Length: 442
Ligand SMILES: Nc1ncnc2c1ncn2[C@@H]1O[C@H](COP(=O)(O)OP(=O)(O)OP(=O)(O)O)[C@@H](O)[C@H]1O
Ligand SMILES: [Mg+2]
Image (cartoon, rainbow, N blue to C red; front, side, top):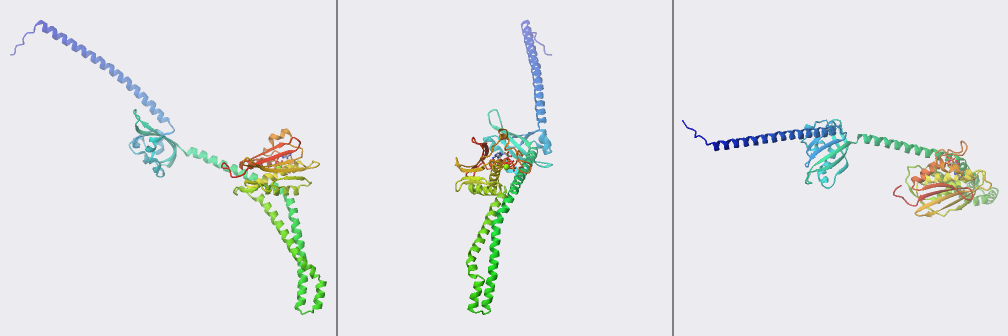
Protein backbone atom coordinates (compact mmCIF):
# COMPACT_ATOMS: atom_id res chain seq x y z
CA UNK A 1 0.00 0.00 0.00
CA UNK A 2 1.39 3.38 -1.00
CA UNK A 3 2.34 5.62 1.86
CA UNK A 4 1.72 9.43 1.54
CA UNK A 5 4.78 11.46 2.42
CA UNK A 6 3.69 13.81 5.09
CA UNK A 7 3.79 17.49 3.88
CA UNK A 8 5.74 20.09 5.71
CA UNK A 9 3.72 22.90 7.40
CA UNK A 10 5.04 25.46 4.81
CA UNK A 11 3.82 23.40 1.90
CA UNK A 12 0.40 23.02 3.47
CA UNK A 13 0.10 26.78 3.99
CA UNK A 14 1.08 27.42 0.36
CA UNK A 15 -1.47 25.04 -1.03
CA UNK A 16 -4.27 26.60 0.95
CA UNK A 17 -3.34 30.05 -0.29
CA UNK A 18 -3.40 28.83 -3.87
CA UNK A 19 -6.85 27.35 -3.37
CA UNK A 20 -8.20 30.53 -1.86
CA UNK A 21 -6.87 32.55 -4.78
CA UNK A 22 -8.41 30.14 -7.32
CA UNK A 23 -11.75 30.32 -5.56
CA UNK A 24 -11.54 34.08 -5.51
CA UNK A 25 -10.81 34.20 -9.23
CA UNK A 26 -13.73 31.88 -9.87
CA UNK A 27 -15.98 34.14 -7.82
CA UNK A 28 -14.84 37.15 -9.82
CA UNK A 29 -15.37 35.30 -13.11
CA UNK A 30 -18.82 34.27 -11.95
CA UNK A 31 -19.68 37.82 -10.95
CA UNK A 32 -18.50 39.03 -14.39
CA UNK A 33 -20.59 36.34 -16.05
CA UNK A 34 -23.66 37.41 -14.10
CA UNK A 35 -22.95 41.03 -15.07
CA UNK A 36 -22.57 40.14 -18.75
CA UNK A 37 -25.70 38.06 -18.61
CA UNK A 38 -27.67 41.05 -17.26
CA UNK A 39 -26.15 43.32 -19.94
CA UNK A 40 -27.01 40.84 -22.67
CA UNK A 41 -30.54 40.55 -21.38
CA UNK A 42 -30.85 44.35 -21.36
CA UNK A 43 -29.48 44.56 -24.91
CA UNK A 44 -31.86 41.81 -25.96
CA UNK A 45 -34.78 43.68 -24.49
CA UNK A 46 -33.64 46.84 -26.32
CA UNK A 47 -33.28 44.88 -29.55
CA UNK A 48 -36.74 43.39 -29.15
CA UNK A 49 -38.16 46.82 -28.51
CA UNK A 50 -36.41 48.26 -31.57
CA UNK A 51 -37.61 45.34 -33.68
CA UNK A 52 -41.19 45.65 -32.56
CA UNK A 53 -41.02 49.43 -33.18
CA UNK A 54 -39.63 48.83 -36.65
CA UNK A 55 -42.25 46.11 -37.32
CA UNK A 56 -45.09 48.35 -36.18
CA UNK A 57 -43.86 51.23 -38.39
CA UNK A 58 -43.52 48.87 -41.35
CA UNK A 59 -46.89 47.28 -40.65
CA UNK A 60 -48.72 50.57 -40.53
CA UNK A 61 -47.10 51.98 -43.69
CA UNK A 62 -49.72 52.35 -46.39
CA UNK A 63 -46.97 52.65 -49.01
CA UNK A 64 -45.38 49.45 -50.25
CA UNK A 65 -41.89 48.58 -49.03
CA UNK A 66 -39.52 46.04 -50.53
CA UNK A 67 -35.91 45.57 -49.49
CA UNK A 68 -33.64 43.62 -51.83
CA UNK A 69 -29.98 42.63 -51.90
CA UNK A 70 -27.62 43.97 -54.56
CA UNK A 71 -28.76 41.29 -56.98
CA UNK A 72 -32.41 42.18 -56.59
CA UNK A 73 -33.33 39.22 -54.39
CA UNK A 74 -36.12 40.13 -51.95
CA UNK A 75 -34.99 40.25 -48.30
CA UNK A 76 -37.95 41.89 -46.69
CA UNK A 77 -41.37 43.31 -47.58
CA UNK A 78 -44.02 45.09 -45.53
CA UNK A 79 -47.64 44.17 -44.85
CA UNK A 80 -49.02 46.50 -47.56
CA UNK A 81 -46.94 44.75 -50.18
CA UNK A 82 -47.97 41.31 -48.90
CA UNK A 83 -51.63 42.34 -49.17
CA UNK A 84 -51.22 43.84 -52.63
CA UNK A 85 -49.46 40.89 -54.26
CA UNK A 86 -51.46 38.35 -52.22
CA UNK A 87 -48.36 36.50 -50.91
CA UNK A 88 -46.78 36.30 -47.47
CA UNK A 89 -43.33 37.64 -46.62
CA UNK A 90 -41.95 34.10 -46.22
CA UNK A 91 -43.04 33.27 -49.79
CA UNK A 92 -41.57 36.46 -51.18
CA UNK A 93 -38.19 36.42 -49.43
CA UNK A 94 -35.60 34.84 -51.70
CA UNK A 95 -37.36 35.48 -55.03
CA UNK A 96 -36.04 38.04 -57.51
CA UNK A 97 -38.11 41.23 -57.26
CA UNK A 98 -38.59 41.35 -61.03
CA UNK A 99 -40.77 38.22 -60.83
CA UNK A 100 -43.34 40.37 -59.02
CA UNK A 101 -43.31 42.99 -61.79
CA UNK A 102 -45.80 42.83 -64.68
CA UNK A 103 -44.43 41.64 -68.03
CA UNK A 104 -44.68 45.05 -69.72
CA UNK A 105 -42.31 46.58 -67.18
CA UNK A 106 -39.77 43.75 -67.00
CA UNK A 107 -37.34 45.48 -69.30
CA UNK A 108 -37.62 48.73 -67.39
CA UNK A 109 -36.74 47.18 -64.01
CA UNK A 110 -33.81 45.13 -65.35
CA UNK A 111 -31.65 48.25 -65.32
CA UNK A 112 -32.62 49.35 -61.79
CA UNK A 113 -29.43 48.23 -60.05
CA UNK A 114 -27.28 49.83 -62.81
CA UNK A 115 -29.19 53.10 -62.58
CA UNK A 116 -28.93 53.09 -58.81
CA UNK A 117 -25.16 53.27 -59.01
CA UNK A 118 -25.61 56.72 -60.59
CA UNK A 119 -28.59 58.13 -58.71
CA UNK A 120 -31.78 57.14 -56.87
CA UNK A 121 -34.82 56.40 -59.04
CA UNK A 122 -37.77 58.73 -58.49
CA UNK A 123 -41.46 58.42 -59.48
CA UNK A 124 -40.87 55.54 -61.80
CA UNK A 125 -44.09 54.02 -63.14
CA UNK A 126 -44.21 50.22 -62.97
CA UNK A 127 -46.91 47.62 -62.27
CA UNK A 128 -46.88 44.67 -59.87
CA UNK A 129 -48.80 41.50 -60.62
CA UNK A 130 -51.54 40.67 -58.15
CA UNK A 131 -54.53 38.33 -57.96
CA UNK A 132 -56.65 41.33 -59.08
CA UNK A 133 -54.49 41.90 -62.16
CA UNK A 134 -51.65 44.34 -62.73
CA UNK A 135 -51.53 47.19 -60.20
CA UNK A 136 -49.79 50.33 -61.48
CA UNK A 137 -47.44 52.00 -58.99
CA UNK A 138 -45.33 55.06 -58.68
CA UNK A 139 -42.02 53.70 -57.33
CA UNK A 140 -39.02 55.31 -55.68
CA UNK A 141 -35.89 53.20 -55.41
CA UNK A 142 -32.86 54.10 -53.27
CA UNK A 143 -29.50 52.36 -52.92
CA UNK A 144 -28.65 50.57 -49.64
CA UNK A 145 -24.96 50.84 -48.69
CA UNK A 146 -22.73 49.27 -46.05
CA UNK A 147 -20.53 51.20 -43.60
CA UNK A 148 -17.84 51.43 -46.26
CA UNK A 149 -20.23 52.89 -48.80
CA UNK A 150 -20.47 49.78 -50.97
CA UNK A 151 -23.82 49.04 -52.64
CA UNK A 152 -25.36 46.09 -50.84
CA UNK A 153 -28.93 46.33 -52.01
CA UNK A 154 -31.88 48.58 -52.73
CA UNK A 155 -34.96 49.84 -50.95
CA UNK A 156 -38.09 50.32 -52.98
CA UNK A 157 -41.10 52.32 -51.82
CA UNK A 158 -44.18 52.42 -54.03
CA UNK A 159 -47.66 53.90 -54.06
CA UNK A 160 -50.54 52.52 -56.12
CA UNK A 161 -51.47 54.88 -58.91
CA UNK A 162 -55.11 53.82 -58.84
CA UNK A 163 -56.29 56.67 -56.60
CA UNK A 164 -54.11 59.22 -58.33
CA UNK A 165 -55.25 58.01 -61.72
CA UNK A 166 -58.89 58.17 -60.66
CA UNK A 167 -58.37 61.73 -59.48
CA UNK A 168 -56.60 62.61 -62.76
CA UNK A 169 -59.41 61.05 -64.77
CA UNK A 170 -62.05 62.99 -62.85
CA UNK A 171 -60.01 66.17 -63.34
CA UNK A 172 -59.61 65.49 -67.05
CA UNK A 173 -63.27 64.84 -67.62
CA UNK A 174 -64.23 67.96 -65.61
CA UNK A 175 -61.78 69.93 -67.73
CA UNK A 176 -63.20 68.45 -70.95
CA UNK A 177 -66.75 69.31 -69.83
CA UNK A 178 -65.70 72.86 -69.01
CA UNK A 179 -64.04 73.23 -72.39
CA UNK A 180 -67.17 71.95 -74.09
CA UNK A 181 -69.34 74.34 -72.09
CA UNK A 182 -66.99 77.17 -73.01
CA UNK A 183 -67.13 76.24 -76.70
CA UNK A 184 -70.94 76.15 -76.51
CA UNK A 185 -70.95 79.54 -74.86
CA UNK A 186 -68.72 80.96 -77.57
CA UNK A 187 -70.98 79.41 -80.19
CA UNK A 188 -74.09 80.81 -78.47
CA UNK A 189 -72.59 84.27 -78.37
CA UNK A 190 -71.61 83.91 -82.01
CA UNK A 191 -75.16 82.95 -82.89
CA UNK A 192 -76.45 85.96 -80.94
CA UNK A 193 -74.20 88.36 -82.88
CA UNK A 194 -75.10 86.56 -86.07
CA UNK A 195 -78.77 87.02 -85.23
CA UNK A 196 -78.24 90.75 -84.89
CA UNK A 197 -76.48 90.86 -88.22
CA UNK A 198 -78.96 88.80 -90.22
CA UNK A 199 -81.06 91.83 -91.15
CA UNK A 200 -78.02 93.60 -92.57
CA UNK A 201 -76.92 90.48 -94.41
CA UNK A 202 -80.36 90.00 -95.96
CA UNK A 203 -80.32 93.58 -97.18
CA UNK A 204 -76.81 93.21 -98.47
CA UNK A 205 -77.67 90.06 -100.43
CA UNK A 206 -80.88 91.57 -101.75
CA UNK A 207 -79.05 94.26 -103.73
CA UNK A 208 -76.89 92.12 -106.03
CA UNK A 209 -79.57 89.47 -106.31
CA UNK A 210 -82.15 92.01 -107.46
CA UNK A 211 -79.95 93.35 -110.20
CA UNK A 212 -79.00 89.81 -111.27
CA UNK A 213 -82.75 89.18 -111.54
CA UNK A 214 -83.30 92.39 -113.53
CA UNK A 215 -80.51 91.45 -115.94
CA UNK A 216 -81.86 87.95 -116.37
CA UNK A 217 -85.30 89.32 -117.23
CA UNK A 218 -83.78 91.59 -119.87
CA UNK A 219 -81.74 88.67 -121.25
CA UNK A 220 -84.90 86.56 -121.42
CA UNK A 221 -86.68 89.31 -123.38
CA UNK A 222 -83.75 89.66 -125.79
CA UNK A 223 -83.57 85.88 -126.29
CA UNK A 224 -87.28 85.84 -127.26
CA UNK A 225 -86.69 88.66 -129.80
CA UNK A 226 -83.65 86.86 -131.26
CA UNK A 227 -85.66 83.66 -131.60
CA UNK A 228 -88.36 85.51 -133.60
CA UNK A 229 -85.65 86.97 -135.84
CA UNK A 230 -83.93 83.61 -136.41
CA UNK A 231 -87.29 81.94 -137.21
CA UNK A 232 -87.87 84.63 -139.88
CA UNK A 233 -84.44 83.92 -141.38
CA UNK A 234 -85.18 80.21 -141.46
CA UNK A 235 -88.52 80.72 -143.14
CA UNK A 236 -86.67 82.47 -146.02
CA UNK A 237 -87.90 86.03 -145.37
CA UNK A 238 -86.61 88.71 -147.72
CA UNK A 239 -83.73 91.01 -146.82
CA UNK A 240 -86.09 93.95 -146.68
CA UNK A 241 -88.54 92.35 -144.24
CA UNK A 242 -85.65 91.10 -142.07
CA UNK A 243 -84.25 94.64 -141.88
CA UNK A 244 -87.66 95.94 -140.93
CA UNK A 245 -88.08 93.25 -138.26
CA UNK A 246 -84.64 94.03 -136.87
CA UNK A 247 -85.63 97.65 -136.43
CA UNK A 248 -89.04 96.83 -134.93
CA UNK A 249 -87.47 94.45 -132.42
CA UNK A 250 -84.65 96.95 -131.70
CA UNK A 251 -82.22 94.08 -132.07
CA UNK A 252 -79.14 96.28 -132.48
CA UNK A 253 -79.66 97.82 -129.04
CA UNK A 254 -80.29 94.39 -127.54
CA UNK A 255 -77.04 93.01 -128.99
CA UNK A 256 -75.16 96.06 -127.73
CA UNK A 257 -76.65 95.50 -124.25
CA UNK A 258 -75.79 91.83 -124.10
CA UNK A 259 -72.21 92.26 -122.91
CA UNK A 260 -73.00 94.72 -120.15
CA UNK A 261 -75.92 92.54 -119.01
CA UNK A 262 -73.64 89.50 -118.72
CA UNK A 263 -70.93 91.58 -116.99
CA UNK A 264 -73.44 93.04 -114.54
CA UNK A 265 -74.82 89.59 -113.76
CA UNK A 266 -71.31 88.28 -113.17
CA UNK A 267 -70.60 91.23 -110.90
CA UNK A 268 -73.76 90.54 -108.89
CA UNK A 269 -72.80 86.86 -108.56
CA UNK A 270 -69.29 87.90 -107.43
CA UNK A 271 -70.77 90.20 -104.82
CA UNK A 272 -72.98 87.38 -103.50
CA UNK A 273 -69.93 85.11 -103.37
CA UNK A 274 -67.95 87.74 -101.41
CA UNK A 275 -70.77 88.20 -98.91
CA UNK A 276 -71.01 84.46 -98.41
CA UNK A 277 -67.24 84.26 -97.95
CA UNK A 278 -67.35 87.00 -95.32
CA UNK A 279 -70.17 85.18 -93.58
CA UNK A 280 -68.05 82.05 -93.40
CA UNK A 281 -66.00 83.86 -90.75
CA UNK A 282 -68.94 83.34 -88.43
CA UNK A 283 -69.18 79.63 -89.00
CA UNK A 284 -65.52 78.79 -88.45
CA UNK A 285 -65.13 76.86 -85.21
CA UNK A 286 -62.34 76.41 -82.68
CA UNK A 287 -61.52 73.07 -84.28
CA UNK A 288 -59.88 74.78 -87.27
CA UNK A 289 -56.12 75.22 -87.01
CA UNK A 290 -54.41 78.51 -86.20
CA UNK A 291 -52.95 80.16 -89.27
CA UNK A 292 -51.49 83.42 -90.47
CA UNK A 293 -54.22 85.85 -91.51
CA UNK A 294 -54.71 89.46 -92.51
CA UNK A 295 -56.08 91.31 -89.48
CA UNK A 296 -57.02 94.33 -91.61
CA UNK A 297 -59.23 92.19 -93.85
CA UNK A 298 -60.92 90.71 -90.77
CA UNK A 299 -61.51 94.19 -89.26
CA UNK A 300 -62.88 95.65 -92.48
CA UNK A 301 -65.20 92.72 -93.05
CA UNK A 302 -66.52 93.02 -89.47
CA UNK A 303 -66.92 96.78 -89.91
CA UNK A 304 -68.99 96.30 -93.04
CA UNK A 305 -71.58 94.28 -91.18
CA UNK A 306 -71.77 96.50 -88.15
CA UNK A 307 -72.05 99.73 -90.12
CA UNK A 308 -74.67 98.26 -92.47
CA UNK A 309 -76.74 97.00 -89.59
CA UNK A 310 -76.50 100.24 -87.62
CA UNK A 311 -79.67 102.33 -87.76
CA UNK A 312 -77.82 105.64 -87.68
CA UNK A 313 -74.94 106.91 -89.74
CA UNK A 314 -71.59 106.48 -88.06
CA UNK A 315 -68.54 108.25 -89.41
CA UNK A 316 -65.61 105.86 -89.71
CA UNK A 317 -62.03 107.09 -89.52
CA UNK A 318 -60.03 104.27 -91.05
CA UNK A 319 -56.35 104.49 -90.08
CA UNK A 320 -55.69 100.86 -90.91
CA UNK A 321 -52.68 99.83 -93.00
CA UNK A 322 -53.23 97.84 -96.20
CA UNK A 323 -52.20 94.55 -94.64
CA UNK A 324 -51.32 93.31 -91.16
CA UNK A 325 -50.29 89.75 -90.55
CA UNK A 326 -51.51 88.11 -87.35
CA UNK A 327 -51.54 84.54 -86.07
CA UNK A 328 -54.54 82.56 -84.84
CA UNK A 329 -58.13 81.61 -85.63
CA UNK A 330 -59.30 84.39 -87.96
CA UNK A 331 -62.94 83.40 -87.30
CA UNK A 332 -62.56 83.91 -83.56
CA UNK A 333 -60.71 87.21 -83.99
CA UNK A 334 -63.52 88.30 -86.33
CA UNK A 335 -65.92 87.53 -83.49
CA UNK A 336 -63.87 89.71 -81.10
CA UNK A 337 -63.73 92.61 -83.56
CA UNK A 338 -67.48 92.33 -84.31
CA UNK A 339 -68.17 92.60 -80.58
CA UNK A 340 -65.84 95.58 -80.08
CA UNK A 341 -67.41 97.39 -83.02
CA UNK A 342 -70.92 96.43 -81.95
CA UNK A 343 -70.22 97.76 -78.45
CA UNK A 344 -68.92 101.00 -79.95
CA UNK A 345 -71.94 101.30 -82.27
CA UNK A 346 -74.31 100.60 -79.35
CA UNK A 347 -72.56 103.22 -77.20
CA UNK A 348 -72.98 105.78 -79.99
CA UNK A 349 -76.77 105.49 -80.20
CA UNK A 350 -77.39 108.82 -78.50
CA UNK A 351 -74.24 110.63 -79.64
CA UNK A 352 -75.02 113.57 -81.98
CA UNK A 353 -72.05 113.06 -84.34
CA UNK A 354 -71.15 109.39 -83.82
CA UNK A 355 -67.75 108.33 -85.02
CA UNK A 356 -65.47 105.31 -84.76
CA UNK A 357 -61.72 105.44 -85.31
CA UNK A 358 -59.87 102.27 -86.29
CA UNK A 359 -56.09 101.97 -85.99
CA UNK A 360 -53.65 99.07 -86.10
CA UNK A 361 -49.94 98.39 -86.28
CA UNK A 362 -47.09 96.23 -85.03
CA UNK A 363 -44.84 96.61 -81.98
CA UNK A 364 -42.52 94.22 -80.13
CA UNK A 365 -43.30 91.23 -82.31
CA UNK A 366 -47.01 91.77 -81.71
CA UNK A 367 -49.84 93.27 -83.66
CA UNK A 368 -52.27 95.72 -82.06
CA UNK A 369 -55.62 97.07 -83.11
CA UNK A 370 -57.75 99.77 -81.47
CA UNK A 371 -61.39 100.78 -81.77
CA UNK A 372 -62.08 104.30 -80.45
CA UNK A 373 -65.52 105.82 -80.17
CA UNK A 374 -66.77 109.26 -79.16
CA UNK A 375 -69.63 107.85 -77.09
CA UNK A 376 -70.34 108.47 -73.40
CA UNK A 377 -67.49 106.20 -72.22
CA UNK A 378 -67.73 103.68 -69.38
CA UNK A 379 -68.82 104.69 -65.84
CA UNK A 380 -65.90 104.28 -63.41
CA UNK A 381 -67.80 101.74 -61.28
CA UNK A 382 -68.33 99.49 -64.34
CA UNK A 383 -64.72 99.45 -65.52
CA UNK A 384 -63.70 96.50 -63.32
CA UNK A 385 -66.73 94.43 -64.33
CA UNK A 386 -66.59 94.78 -68.12
CA UNK A 387 -65.07 91.32 -68.62
CA UNK A 388 -67.36 89.56 -66.13
CA UNK A 389 -69.63 87.08 -67.86
CA UNK A 390 -73.22 88.39 -68.12
CA UNK A 391 -72.27 91.95 -67.17
CA UNK A 392 -74.35 94.18 -69.40
CA UNK A 393 -75.94 97.61 -69.19
CA UNK A 394 -78.09 96.93 -72.24
CA UNK A 395 -81.82 96.17 -72.05
CA UNK A 396 -82.96 92.54 -72.05
CA UNK A 397 -82.77 91.14 -75.57
CA UNK A 398 -80.12 93.62 -76.71
CA UNK A 399 -77.07 92.22 -74.96
CA UNK A 400 -76.16 89.01 -73.20
CA UNK A 401 -73.15 90.50 -71.43
CA UNK A 402 -71.00 87.68 -72.77
CA UNK A 403 -69.35 89.58 -75.60
CA UNK A 404 -66.35 90.97 -73.76
CA UNK A 405 -65.87 87.99 -71.48
CA UNK A 406 -65.66 85.65 -74.48
CA UNK A 407 -63.56 88.12 -76.46
CA UNK A 408 -61.13 88.34 -73.55
CA UNK A 409 -60.88 84.53 -73.39
CA UNK A 410 -60.19 84.38 -77.12
CA UNK A 411 -57.47 87.06 -76.94
CA UNK A 412 -55.75 85.32 -74.00
CA UNK A 413 -55.99 81.91 -75.67
CA UNK A 414 -54.19 83.46 -78.64
CA UNK A 415 -51.36 84.61 -76.39
CA UNK A 416 -52.59 88.20 -76.66
CA UNK A 417 -54.52 90.72 -74.53
CA UNK A 418 -57.69 92.79 -74.63
CA UNK A 419 -58.33 95.96 -72.64
CA UNK A 420 -60.87 98.75 -72.60
CA UNK A 421 -60.39 102.22 -71.14
CA UNK A 422 -61.98 105.62 -71.19
CA UNK A 423 -60.23 108.21 -73.33
CA UNK A 424 -59.14 111.46 -71.66
CA UNK A 425 -61.22 113.51 -74.12
CA UNK A 426 -64.29 111.26 -73.84
CA UNK A 427 -65.46 108.00 -75.36
CA UNK A 428 -63.96 104.55 -74.93
CA UNK A 429 -60.97 102.82 -76.53
CA UNK A 430 -60.66 99.06 -76.87
CA UNK A 431 -57.28 97.57 -77.68
CA UNK A 432 -56.59 94.02 -78.79
CA UNK A 433 -53.01 92.71 -79.03
CA UNK A 434 -52.16 89.48 -80.84
CA UNK A 435 -48.96 87.59 -81.63
CA UNK A 436 -47.43 88.20 -85.03
CA UNK A 437 -46.32 84.63 -85.43
CA UNK A 438 -46.93 81.28 -83.81
CA UNK A 439 -45.99 81.39 -80.10
CA UNK A 440 -44.47 78.28 -78.53
CA UNK A 441 -46.70 78.64 -75.45
CA UNK A 442 -49.99 78.95 -77.36
N1 LIG B 1 -67.34 101.21 -76.20
C1 LIG B 1 -68.09 101.14 -75.08
N2 LIG B 1 -68.64 102.26 -74.56
C2 LIG B 1 -69.39 102.20 -73.44
N3 LIG B 1 -69.67 101.05 -72.76
C3 LIG B 1 -69.16 99.92 -73.24
C4 LIG B 1 -68.34 99.88 -74.41
N4 LIG B 1 -67.97 98.61 -74.63
C5 LIG B 1 -68.54 97.88 -73.64
N5 LIG B 1 -69.26 98.64 -72.81
C6 LIG B 1 -70.00 98.22 -71.62
O1 LIG B 1 -69.60 96.89 -71.31
C7 LIG B 1 -70.74 96.06 -71.17
C8 LIG B 1 -70.37 94.63 -71.47
O2 LIG B 1 -70.06 94.48 -72.84
P1 LIG B 1 -70.19 93.05 -73.49
O3 LIG B 1 -69.77 93.17 -74.91
O4 LIG B 1 -69.51 92.07 -72.64
O5 LIG B 1 -71.72 92.71 -73.37
P2 LIG B 1 -72.92 93.39 -74.14
O6 LIG B 1 -72.43 94.17 -75.31
O7 LIG B 1 -73.73 94.12 -73.14
O8 LIG B 1 -73.72 92.12 -74.65
P3 LIG B 1 -73.30 91.15 -75.85
O9 LIG B 1 -71.95 91.59 -76.33
O10 LIG B 1 -73.24 89.81 -75.22
O11 LIG B 1 -74.36 91.30 -76.87
C9 LIG B 1 -71.76 96.68 -72.07
O12 LIG B 1 -73.08 96.33 -71.70
C10 LIG B 1 -71.48 98.16 -71.88
O13 LIG B 1 -72.11 98.64 -70.71
MG1 LIG C 1 -71.04 93.36 -76.69
